[in-house]
Image (cartoon, rainbow, N blue to C red; front, side, top):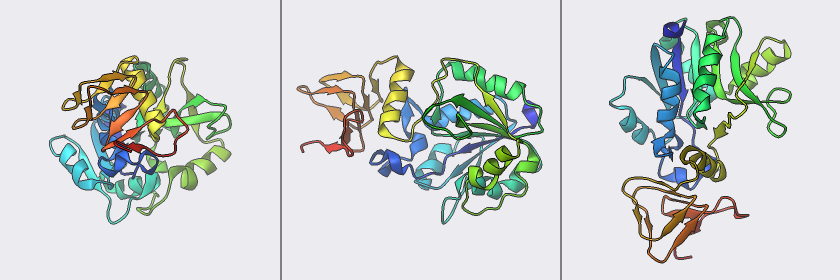
Length: 269
């Protein structure tokens, strides 16, 4: 079945909770462990799908440039982003009757996630939408389960979606769950720490999980001081007298997301 799957990576969101980082980069191009989130998602999907599409909107010019040399179909949403359901509605002709392997570009999985996605695909009967979930006492999407951003969708659940702003949970999944028509696949990997990199705290947490706690310093960053458990973007500088701990330095800003600070601190303030 894998070669029959149409892979779709959702990458159009504005990333408002990740500001100010997303004022200069779209969230899918923010790096985790030195690799853009977009690349992590494409790797998850392309391993099982014959063809892959990516939707873009926020910082569309940067996304188009990043995708220019890739063998993917680009769905540029204009003038507004269409949400998870609207994105698939716009892609209906491209999907063309195939089942869809869908993944959010802001979801990061540890190495154990490779086998989890393989199990998700291998065990699908092709009849019901199959959503990858983990037990969660805090974030409950379906009873006591939290959806972690990867799903298999049969054509019947995609064909009637409209290219209008809407979310899959609201227009499809909530009612299907009420009817008992969703296959909620709970990961068998106890260590699947799937992270939605939607906030600076989760973005930093994903980077530290990816590096084993080592600093995540992008090529082009200048580090003269000490950096511990932190992310430093290309073009940024850590001066010789600085000690950067549990921080994200990017977009001209230093964020300390594990502190009780709602905003980043501009250098010099």
